[in-house]
Image (cartoon, rainbow, N blue to C red; front, side, top):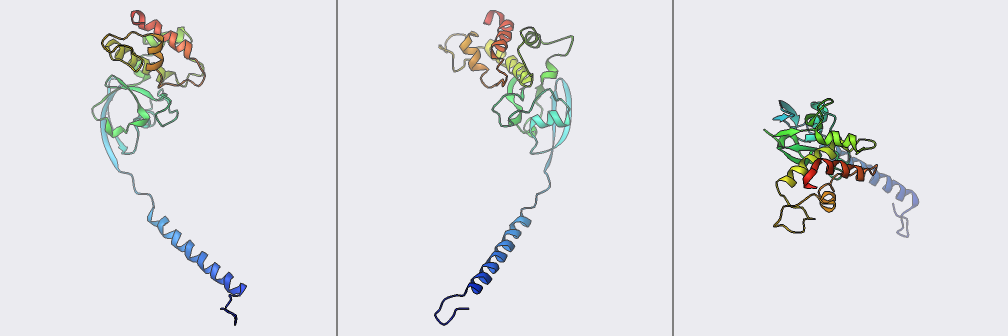
Length: 210
């Protein structure tokens, strides 16, 4: 209450401040209750992974990467940045390389997915897997599955004559020059810096295209 001069006392100010704080806290609690998490929306996806059919019920927010790793136990495909920037999660989808962390699993019904496990296995390595071993194309190995899957897709693109930003003449069939290789593999990062050996491994498999 104001005194005779019309000024509020210190006690009145403290009481008003406490009341305002209590009302603010009550107002803040209501939205928190309204924003309670909703139950997940489930979807069923059927796709072929490494030649085997799978029908899986998934949360519609599940990425293809998490489906492969968490539900199909194909942990060769790695989760790096989870933002499509490092390439560690690269797989082949219907023959084309993609970042599996950027694709929802329910977006791939009927797709044919190939992971590093589907390219080869001990005793029957894919030529690129064997080349990475022979040329020491890795150090810690975390990016290696994505590097190899990306290289498989990249060499297929090259064989089909698909140009890149480094292709000087769009009217001719591009060859795997050093510039072409760097540009085409630029989406796959190696924190260990094994790029020269990675390039040597890919070039050894490219053969006449290099």
